[in-house]
Image 1 (cartoon, rainbow, N blue to C red):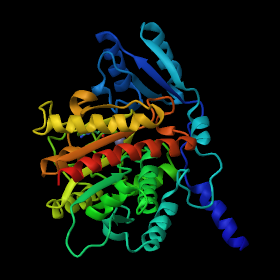
Image 2: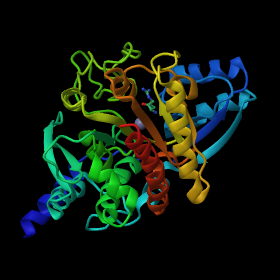
Image 3: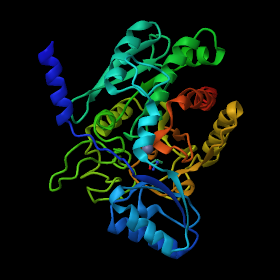
Image 4: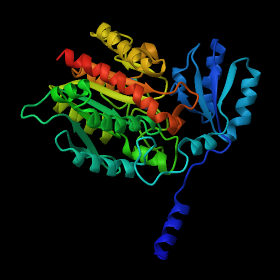
Length: 410
Ligand code: ARG
Ligand code: ZN
């Protein structure tokens, strides 16, 4: 026993954990071209971690720009900002304090109202998929770069014929912890309300819902163990020491927009270079005849987005998608008044190629939506665990609204 304890302590001491003591998240409010230029210069000269939008190129006049500034650059950045007349605001005073506050003491077991580590999610997947074999089953769609199993849950009443389906994934981006929390919540809700909630019952009778609880498992695990702010996958690219590709820029949709491997939005060495993307894309291709909707859950900003993001051109189904997105947003708002904005990705936030929503749409999955869950920046990626339940409850209403529309149009 003692030997193991000692071993554990040594391993803990050796594992490098990035700390963020004293680092801040600032909100910049550019209102003139000079401000935009300044932000771009800042990004070019020092390491700023863009929270929203997700890279310097996407900065424009009249949007809020949330950046995480490493401690070493704080003085420099404040001097530069003071010299300009741009309005700024401190969103997070001390990132490490907010990180520690997000979860509080780590519970020993899986919990729907806490952020679960991958180990806990993995055992939850195993347990829940055998808990109710009439309604849920699991299948492997491959492994991640570091060899973790990608297990897809299938919810729906068993049927001898193939049913039309909805596909939903969570956790494409590692640090967006509320997203996997939502997928887990959805599965629980679906199983526990089948038979009592008429809409859920009809949905699971008529359709199957595939849920991938964590898409970017390697990255998610890394955010729990080493660097809370990690976004990308953990794969190596030859010719660089920078790790990771943005798994929402790596799909065969539009062109590759960011080819610097050290960037947080690196699109990869080639389309589907990321095995996680390939695994999911393969599944979608194999089942595209049955998949009627593709839902992908991100955070933060409170948005319901739909194609396109790789072009400003309107999707062929634009007006229907807009109507559904707006209906979903208002269903969500009905619970606690949380306001969501809806629209096509490129025009609503920023143009970005290689996203999963555009890919799904272009292979024929008409109802393709990206959700950006709570909040609008007060906590950003560090949304406190106390908000998991209300966030999930309101989001359920939006997802169910979309599902009902899909069902009506089968
Ligand atoms: N914040 C998400 C991202 O940048 C939004 C995705 C919208 N869709 C897209 N294809 N870019 O990945
Ligand atoms: Zn994301």
